[in-house]
Figure 1 (cartoon, rainbow, N blue to C red):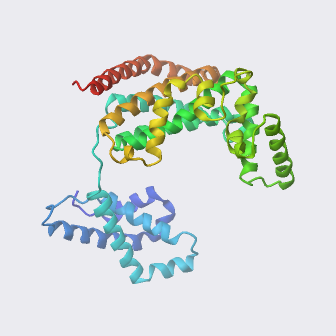
Figure 2: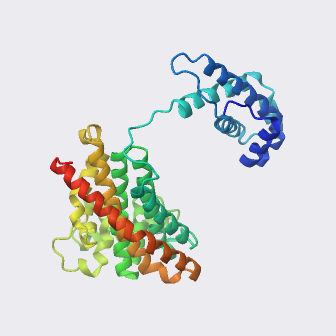
Figure 3: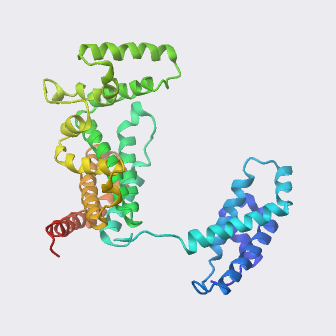
Length: 371
């Protein structure tokens, strides 16, 4: 698209981006015109890569981004002074050109094993998107009343983030993100299973976490809770060095299954994951931990292996999270939302199950060294 926008069309685009910039149209259009001409000149003299099409939308977004960020917090007089400074204008054009050439035209891309249009990605993304739209209608960020829905929303967001990393070719990073999702789903399963008992215990230890970080505004309460933590630890015969793990996992001790469980430990693998009934994932969790802590496994990883490892575990976590969603929230949604969800489930849930099985076969054959 090697055609410069007219000032009229440029104005329409700016008003869509940010109507408050309407008074800056003349200034921005002059910058855009100079930027466009400079990029076209580079294209015409580009002996290394040859000529390229110029995307005016990209140029405008980079330019407007620079301007908005640079003038944020300035008053009208300061903005006028900014606009009248020729050196600033030249710098904005130069920086916008560098970013367009580097980040849009010659941006580095990892080798990609998938894309967002293939069913293993797009079908799961579609399902997650509808669930996020449903849960977004509930009140949030009030832990005493919305803990489970906050955890569910975050879990779905993390699952989507892991999918996006796979699309962009970052398989090991996607597995590290699944590691966080796995932690969230374990908590969700226990919160859904034990309801108030688990929620109250979790909230108590969440406040203990603020005490441990010296983050409570009420210092008198903080001191009182600190003494309470020490007293509870003494009853459990825990040492001072155990405080952090007690604060993080001590809420598990309030659950019925934890009582008289001599093998239970205050950690993820032998505590949270085990009580959630997902101890079979401990080896994969350990693998993701190795990646997270920058071992050679991260640097010299097999992209294809970690792609399948991540997508399979992502699907399995999603199936469990979707069950929590149905158990807790499905009956609360509107009839219209419920009908839409049921229609989608009828169309796509069985497809997701089939995709998981198909990818599992590929992964198993790959590990055997067969095609």
